[in-house]
Amino acid sequence: MTQQDTALGLGIGDEIPTFVRENTGLHHFNRYAAVNEEFVPIHMDDEAGREAGYPRAFGMGNLSTAYLLNALRGWIGEEGTVRALACQFRQPNLKDTTVVARGRITTIRAEGDETVAELEVWTEDGDGNQLAPGTATVALVTPA
Amino acid sequence: MCHLDREDNDVATTLISDEMRGAVGTEMDRSVSFAISESDIRKWALAVYHPEPPPQLFWDAEYAATTRYGGIVAPEDFNPFAWMTPSGPRPAGEDMASPGSLEALLGIEPPPVRSGLNGGTESEFGVRMRPGDAITSVTRLHSYTEREGRLGTMLFTITESNWTNQGDELVKVVRQTSIRY
View 1 (spheres, each protein chain N blue to C red):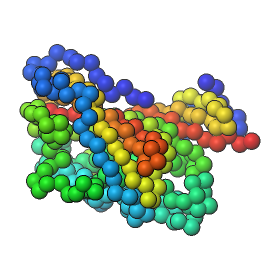
View 2 (view 1 turned 180 degrees about the vertical axis):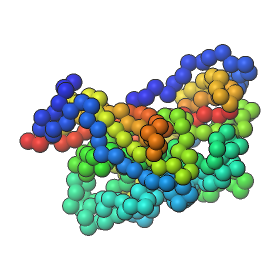
View 3 (view 1 turned 90 degrees about the horizontal axis):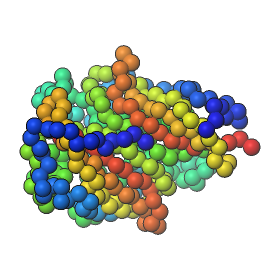
View 4 (view 1 turned 30 degrees about the vertical axis):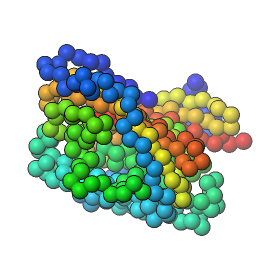
């Protein structure tokens, strides 16, 4: 493990650019339901959300995963590779909530002609409350 | 990777029957997708990037040909099994979103739960999915654990799916945790 990758200018503790979806709601959830066959009442109907123990309808966990991947892709670019992603859906992405996907580098190592970074990743709401924490591994091409 | 496995805690009433314990390790599903189309990938990318346009790599074949991939690839999270497979549509009335659908696949009695949530996922990615690929998914029941939670006894079920393409290349391994109560 190194503290810094000088070729790419990465350092432990660096945060990656965020991926933000403001005011998430049925226009996001329904599109995802349509492609992932996920027309589940808790994601469509406030009453179903309340019956499940939450204040209203909420978004799919897998859509939060997609937002984390979008953040990682946006950072590493098309030359980079997402090797792994894990996250736990601790709090729901309630309807009308802004979701911010974030990541912070925890380790960096050289691996052949690539630089491999491990990150803690998470989604949070607009007030900074963590929703889906996890980890990720990405590989970036090391400049010659 | 996150640790999704949880230790068994004392619970007032177990939701895990002997039949369920006996099913751990069982292959619960083996599916082969239709060949992935560019349109499938395009729609997926539009959905997960909405309302912004998705990256060109996911929809512009001419542009994608200039990238390291040499053509369009799917986002890592793309699901080619949505809606149906060449096995045909699901029988009328079958509800894959019902809390007991997992045990239905195993042919065993489901636990007495009324709701289910997606608890989390762990994915390790291999080769990218591309237009024309037919993906095979083999899913096994990995574990059942339970603990007391805010809503009573919570049942954590982990399944593990291995996806390969038609060339037998590993596409991804996904461990999915469902939480039922």
